[in-house]
Amino acid sequence: MADYGIKVTKQGKDVSSTDPRDFTIHSGYNMLKIHPDYSDYGTVTLNDGNSHYETITISHNFGYNPVFLLFFQRGDDSVWKIPCWDDNTLFVGKQYTDTNTITVHIYHTDPGGGGGFHADENVEYRYFTCIDPRDDLWY
Amino acid sequence: MTYGIKIARPDYGVITAEDDDLVYSSKFSTLSPFACVKFTAVGNSTHGMSYPPAYFYVVDYGTEPNNKWSVNNPPTEMADGMFFSSLGQPAHGPFFGTDATITVDSTKVYCDDIAADVDAIYVFLLHEPLNST
Image 1 (cartoon, rainbow over the protein chains, first blue to last red):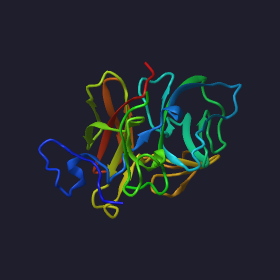
Image 2 (image 1 turned 180 degrees about the vertical axis):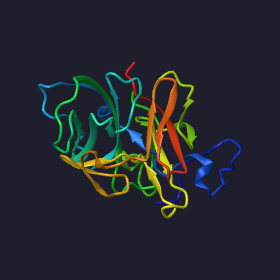
Image 3 (image 1 turned 30 degrees about the vertical axis):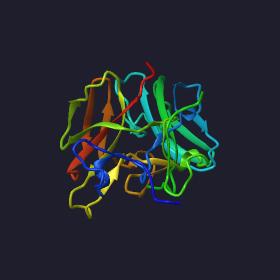
C-alpha cells in the first residue's frame, strides 16, 4: 500500500516537519480514543454491611487489555483523585482481570488485613476505557 | 446516515480496519490536553475550566535516580490485596509511598504533597470532565 495519510500541524509549523511535536494530527501516530460504551460515572456506598471492598466490573469484551483511566471522589471531599491509598482510610485499585474485563476495587479498610472498617461514605468514580490496547499500543 | 472521519494506521485500509487500528475516528473522543501545569513545590493553579478535568501527571526525578521519570505514580493493584509501587517494587498495605499527590476540582489543580527527591511534576489537564453534571 502506498505511503499516504493525513498531517495537521500546529500554528506556525510546517507540514514538511519531521518532528512529531509539530503536529496535532499525524496519521503515523496513534491517538487514544475513548470508547463511550465503556466510559461512565457511578457511585458506590461503603458501609459496615459491605465486604472489605466494593467491586466495579467493566466488561468491554475487546479481547485485549485496553488503556484505562480511573478517577474517584470521596463523599466528604471536593477534589478528584487517581487510584491511590487515600488518607489511610480508603484504597482504590484496578486490575485487568482478563482480556475482556476490568475490575476496580474500592477498599473500605486496610487491604493488608489490619484494622476495621472506616466511616461510612459514598465514593463517586469516573472511568475512561480506550479502544486502544494497553499492550502493543502502536505509535 | 452515518458519517464522520476515520484515519487508519499505516498499511491498513480505512474501510476494513478495526476500531483499534484507527489513528483517529470521529466516533470516539480523544484524550486531548488543554494545559500543562508544572509544580516544583506544594501549591495550586487555577485551570480555567468550569468542571473538574481528567488528568495525568509525570514526575521528573531530575538526575537521580538515573534520570528516571514516572507517570501517575500511586501504586497499582495487581491482585487482591497485592500492590506494586510506582517504581515496580512490591508493596503491600500502607508500606508503599507515593511521590506526589495531585488532585483537581472545578476551579484548580492541586499539588498537596511532593517528595524531596522530585524535581518537578507536570500535570496534563484533559478536556474530558470527571463529574457528570
